[in-house]
Length: 188
Image (cartoon, rainbow, N blue to C red; front, top):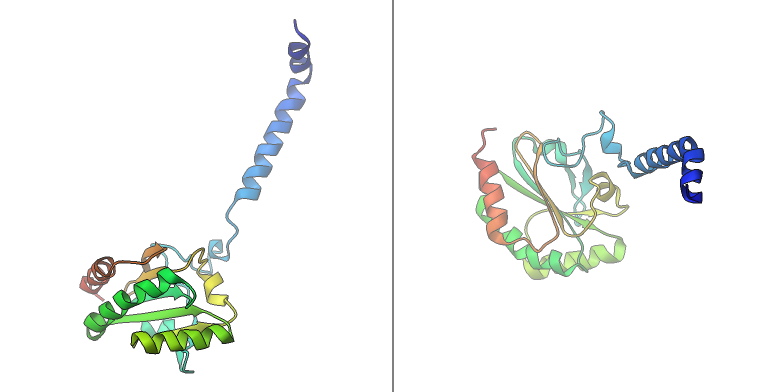
């Protein structure tokens, strides 16, 4: 019997316990840490209710997501320094123009500080954006929705549930329209 085999035979129980402890520790450390796992706080993913929030638009008006029940809502997280974010804005605007009278609301949440808010305002003017642009100055809503990349869009149905999440971009207008049309066809 080799030295290695003798060592394994002699230390097998200790070795097994160590492997199990390390594995259990790894599993515990790798678990998703999220307020969304608390049953009292909705998870920001498909099939769950969209977490509520109240933010001000770039021009100071207050918007409360809970007041939009019965509407289809596209929540788009973006920043004016983000090229894919800016590239998808014309498609979002075009979709909004076509479907707003049918119950579509678009909320462009700008992950911002004061300097970014000015750039966002200027971009919105240049592009002719007419949907509400909200300022998430402290990043609270960005964190609440657990956004990992910009742009990220949440398509919310009339009951307030997240139907689709699109991470990254730019989204094509056909994709945006197909998601919106499907949600508008659902009964309120």
